[in-house]
Amino acid sequence: MSTLTAQILVGGSHPNHGGINPSHYLFLSENSRPAWILTPENIFSEKQEQEKIVWIPTLENMLEDALLMIGIYVLEDEGLCELAKEYFDDLETDHIELYDDISEENLNKLYQECRKLEQKYKVVITSFDGDHFGNQLKALEEYAMDVSICTPKYTRHYSRWQDEVKVRGSLE
Image (spheres, rainbow, N blue to C red):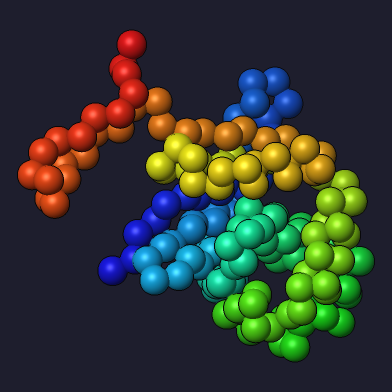
């Protein structure tokens, strides 16, 4: 059974109070290997836009892989999509493995192109374990979109292996 370890809300930013009207969600599922799952369900919309898309990301650039998915499938930037069609064997599939379906060199070119996009959207990144992306969050400095990072202030869970409740952080 895989576990969700992070999520990203993607949508429009509220101009006054920093909220978000999400149009898409990305979930990071992990167990034997990670997978980004993009679902285009706006909780405020009546229509279903498309099916979910799954990318098996690189471990080194897992966060930028998610931002690239957003550029291609959510923003549908014309230049980025044309470049992606040139580099991927089959971009129309709903399952892509980044280590197999694109060269590292071409993937880096796509990251560079994605960083140039006019970012008129917001992402809210939630890491359920607090430091899941490690130093990958620094890559966000290269992007212009509105962003909020959410990490746990307090966690409590029962450890079956040690037969005890583990607490991290504080509610104060």
